[in-house]
Image (cartoon, rainbow, N blue to C red; front, side):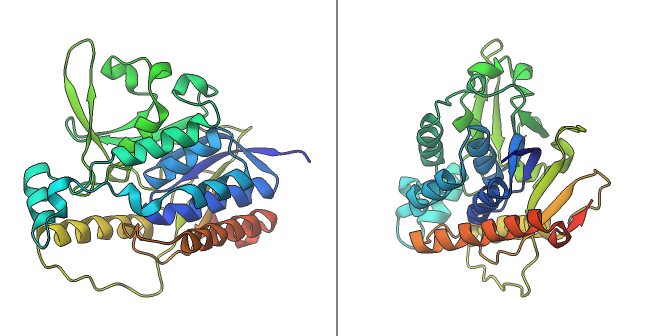
Length: 299
């Protein structure tokens, strides 16, 4: 079977990103291949795997293997009963470290012989993050020379961790310029572009297919009891709002909508629940790409 090359765009969405992995698998099963991929936050996780060459069955196995609850590597002080998370917010401005995400993704990418961007085809992967020190969005590896860093030597898993560093939840990742010694703090790509269509490369050879989440049919009522729950509510609202308020852009792209109604920061799910999310995304993408009328829109 001839595989049709596409440029995949994967939105952020927290734990809902498992459905993005399913959507990537469904796209591959429908006869497409990702010659280029761009992702934000959890979308960066998936984009990195398809750029590394993961196939449908390997994506499914990865979803079952990843210890999703353990990705929340709570800082020691945040484990103190009742007040720990609030104290952690005050001291570290975060509740989790984020190192665990980088460790797990390093293992997944190493299985395909991918460690740095130099191990990938040039231009095949672009990850969106936010430089909160300089108040600007960045695309990795494109902007790394601005920080005095050779893109080919930069770890892909570190870029993934940067893009998933949700404010107040995970600590921002320091990026040090080896030439000047300056340090920039890099955080969640959703602050820059939760659905990074504009970042995707324009080409007549690689049509753009984007994957994003639909607004749930009902709305959550979140109770705020303190600084930690307030931070969680702000971040969750931001992710949901970015999913809902999609800008209409004439980009010549096709958007595939995933109707996944789950708290983006609820990582405490079972293997069975992860598989269910994966399958939901797989079916949605496969159906849309074999019957394009089901896609949300030709933007």
